Image 1: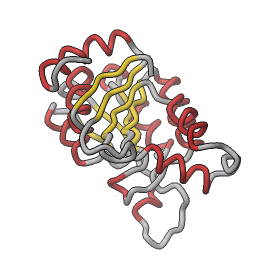
Image 2: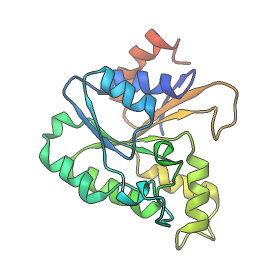
Image 3: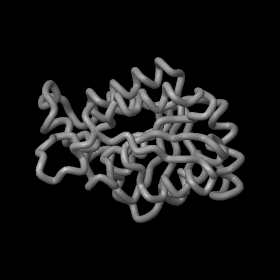
Image 4: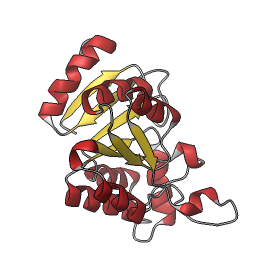
Length: 201
């Protein structure tokens, strides 16, 4: 990502980014939103809609990527709400709130295609990005021979922005950040970063 802002942890990154993007009445679809993610959405009088696949909640089903979004559910949300009411789709990799389950590369591509079709941003909650990449390497056809770095680069090619709790897969004792491709979003989010987190360097 060309632009980034440092924060003290992942929920702080959400607070800054969502202050710039989310307004009352908005709809944010995703895969089993993490508790702070949902909290930041609902605090702003917006609604989080869970589009996780049904298999995620059935402990008797063996599925390699229970963090996947149900693309039909997702498209139903995008079709039934005006574009102006859906600031972004959030994808949590891996998906904490459905048991820390991974999202497949195929599913990430599908989410990106729907986002492009409807003109919506994609934001990754990236705390366990390396773990998700490992599951792709070990479980998804065509990725066994790729390095974790190569898999991560492809994963994030499907996102417009991301939040990170560096206390997870980055293995530091405190820290986080926001990455984004849009200079306009960076400038808007910078105001909230200074207000809540400190200076942007």
